[in-house]
Amino acid sequence: MDIGTLIGLVSGIAIIGAAIVVGGDIGNFINLPGLLIVLGGTSAATFIKFTLSDMVKAIRMGARTAFVDALSDPARIYEQALALARVARGGNLLNLQQTQVKNSLLHHGIQLAVDGHKPDFILSTLKREAYVTRVTAEKGERMFRGIGESAPAFGMIGTLVGLVQMLSDLQDPASIGPAMAIAMLTTFYGALIANLIALPIADKLAAKIDADHMVQDLVIESMAYILKGENPSIMAERLAVYLPSAPPPDAEDAAKAQADAAAQASAQDSAKTSAQAGD
Image (cartoon, rainbow, N blue to C red; front, side, top):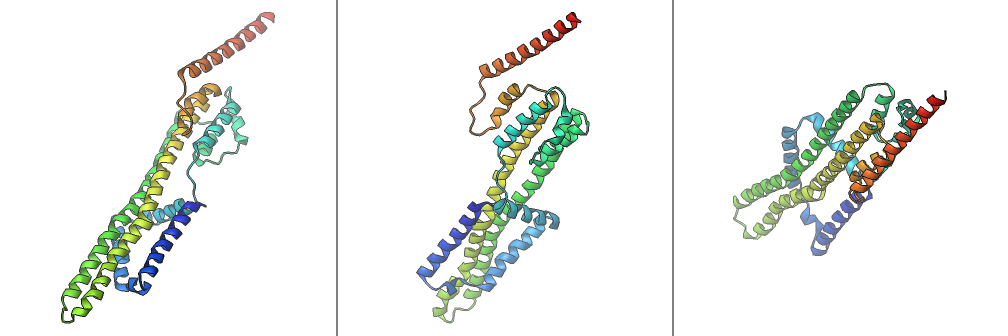
């Protein structure tokens, strides 16, 4: 569970509620017609912007991202990819069948490799799957950002409705103040929904999309190296750029790794030649 979302939501509501209680009566901040205008208007605008199926997916994704899912860890995928490369070294892709991989995209790639599909087909399938996942997540992010834009607007509409009702009856000057306060509540509701719920969830979804995009690129590039039978040392150098805390790979280290790999291959060829000569 993402405890940060819960802390932010509870603390935000508590701070605003405490400020209201200290400054006056909390009942003054409750206005059912204004709340209906904000919630109803925002919901109606969201229904117009998005299809029902996209809304359901976005709500599920937003709740899962805000309260359940943690951001993807490139370092864990990096270590798993290197381990898989060592297992599959030499073209023994069937050895990957017994490996346990939690990342769904990497797991799918391993299954396709074990089933004997060609590398081009495997990589194109993974790229297409990553693209569809990213598009779905972006729809969710746009929906919550749209709610964050619509809620304050309908709050202002509610305020205008309240002002029109207030100005239509000015016979009692003493009622102008309370009526004005009630009219302003819809703006308060819209700003609260946008800035405490909708926009923070949209920002968290955007951060998850960026993190997942990097992990997806890491997985696809890792699968390309695994399918090619790349040396794990060289693979480690090339994939190190995906690690947020790692410095950029040094050209000398990469060249050294390539030289070591070439020397190892040359030694193996020499051993085979000697064995054949002995026979």
